[in-house]
Length: 237
Length: 237
Image 1 (tube, chains in turn green, orange):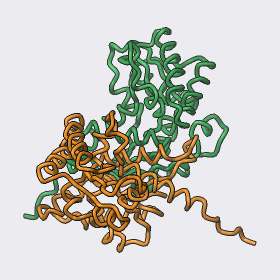
Image 2 (tube, each protein chain N blue to C red):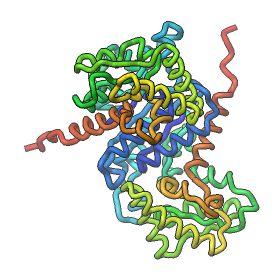
Image 3 (tube, rainbow over the protein chains, first blue to last red):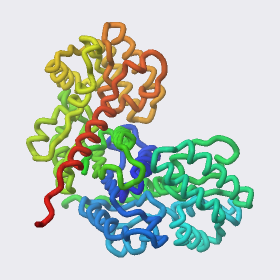
Image 4 (cartoon, chains in turn orange, green):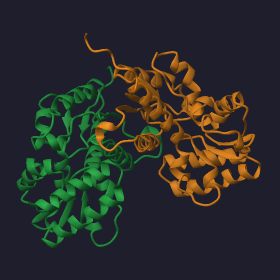
């Protein structure tokens, strides 16, 4: 059973679940992956905490993680990029595997994607180096918007959380195009709010975008399918 | 915290959650309703069980219900119309309020909607009289497709579960139009798979449709907002 430490934000969790369902080969309910989902919306703001301007979200994330474990999750996903700043600390609290969203993204990259990957993320994700570190391990450099551009990305993320998706899309498209102009071969939508605004855009930018939520969903389907195919316990002799 | 006894089917649960989020007045994550969701996809087919052709889903629904209660749900929703055949039996197992999807729908009806309400539902929902009974209590008659039409509705529901939404929409539109032609003032999409196919259709039929999933989501937002506004315990004197 897939456990989802969600609610960061709630619509991003819904988007992630939809991507898990759509990526599962199934013709009836019973073919799908069982999930237990906590939409723990009261977890304090991750971005603010990383930037030193808010309460520590770790205790609430830990509590939610343990309730997913108690509910029987055999594999856990966190559809919030910024929350992955606490991935190592959360993994230390449980023996249940917590998939890492950046590993799921990096697994989709190929050499032809160029040396430099653009990252549209929350300022907390950028500041904590969540993408930079794991991209570098696989030989990819990473570029983020300049200070003014990054402030615009944060404004767009907040607009999505407030339901103002169309306005956010205009801002995000502009920042993505600036990264392409600066030489990035692919652009990661590295905040789960961003695909809610940018995924349906059309034109030349679209094929360059990588949806981190989709990458995590596919990795979860694969992880859960592998465990479903594990040999069953032998029947009593 | 809203508990969701879901997975019947999984995309219908996602659709329900999206409708809860969209109907919640919020500008940031922390304004939203906390949810715990079980996508219990292995619950045996409800429709088959009512028609005497499948395993009893009640034990699996009861187990999921109790895990939602254990996780702290203070109000529970079941985004599956057919599953409401077991609503009374499930409610008897817990002191946590389980909202009823048909009550949520009936609460949206007004006298001007005509004496006869069309119902597009699974054959199990029709056979069990889930809508007929509760509509009658409020003075509304109920009409469902004829035998051949009802078989078509069931085929469309299965197509949605298999991801073939466009084909399902054609069938459902035809059945809905037949109910309108037979004198129904409003048509309830009374299976949570149906809005996944029919909600975005355009034309004269659209304003006559009632989305049971949306009605349940709004009832949940209201129920959870009321409990959030309940007076807090007095501080220690």
